[in-house]
Amino acid sequence: MLIAWFHHCSQIVFRELILTHQIIISGAGIAGLTAALALHAHGFDRIVILERAHDIQPLGSGINLLPHAVRELDALDILDDLIPLCIQTKELFYMNHRGDRIWHEVRGTDAGYRWPQLSIHRGWLQNQLYQKVVSLLGANAVRTGMEVVNVQSSGRRAIAICKKRSTGETVNFEGDLVIGADGIRSSVRRVIVPAEGPPPCNGMVIFRGATWGSSFLTGRSMIIAGDGVRKIVLYPMAHRTDSDQVLLNWAAAVPENPGAGYSHGDWNIPVAPSKFAPEFEGWNLAGVQPSVLMQNSPDTFVYPMVDREPLKSWSKNGNIVLIGDAAHAMYPVGSNGATQSIIDASAIAYYLGRYPRLIDALSAYEADRQVKMTKLQLANRQQGPEVVINIANERAPNGFDDPENVFKPGELQEISDRYTKTSSMEFSKVNEPSPYMCMVM
Image (cartoon, rainbow, N blue to C red):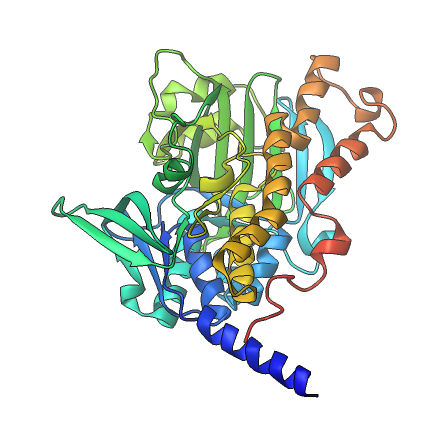
């Protein structure tokens, strides 16, 4: 009894010591804001988020959140705020450019998951996360206009060195831990891998935009289509309140013009639809003409398709660690970018709340997440499940009436199952409660 009592008391002391950690998060994107919410859920309240933007604006385009990420958001009590802003995706079709259907998957709760798959505007999601952080941690928890340019270790402490963008002056923030959630061009990552250059491009660029239009198929359907050279992703992400229209998000990948000179890692490079819409003339996908959709989009942007090399370690000195794209930026395949960032955020909070020593918490976090994400990064370089589009175009360049005449029996299912396993989307895993919220106070 005495030993049990001593163990119980020591756990309380350790817990109290852990929760006094000052945690600095670089980046108020989806990963950083979710990390703040998860840390708060585990009892941490000395948290500051440093964001280079002058304010949090609803920028970006559509993203998809898979059920295992939505599970984490539900555990953080924010899912109900998101449901009115999004569409719960029901199904995914892979097609060729003629609209011939290669493969069909039921998604989210319609497929039997406990949580839905959400199609949502990235900026709307970010804003909801931001509002939740402010309501729980206060307005001073998010410091905008603060660009983290370096991180230094001083003993057990970490110092985030910032440039105040309004004045150019240097401002230092000192804490026990710096979490790098600052994306593919992460300054915190440069501390861990200082010799790494710009993110490499695979020779493709992505044009993207959104516009209001008529729904297609079930109204909750997603299409990924291509001709072996070009590819487009198309899905609705919101309902219009005053009509039956939906906000259609699209992203189109084409080979990069070598002389274009697009900045690698910058999502917000404006470009005129006339530069790329003609590439998709004549395509018809379930009644949707992509070239018309592109021409009707008020704002269109271009982004070179880039990723980062997998790292053997995401941490340094026991007081610096990476999450999200800063740790494992991957090609936008399989809806795993934002999804895995959210899971990272929940995981790092869980391990920080579980282990008294920071270095042990970071080691446990990496042991859980690093190998999984390396496999996913490499799978996305091989196009993940979207490889079926290229196979179909190689075998049937003039189209087909039945995919069974193009693919071997079971071949499509095998490709789908392989990626499901790599992305940890098995029903047996996803339908369980979050493994990272079991210690929530």
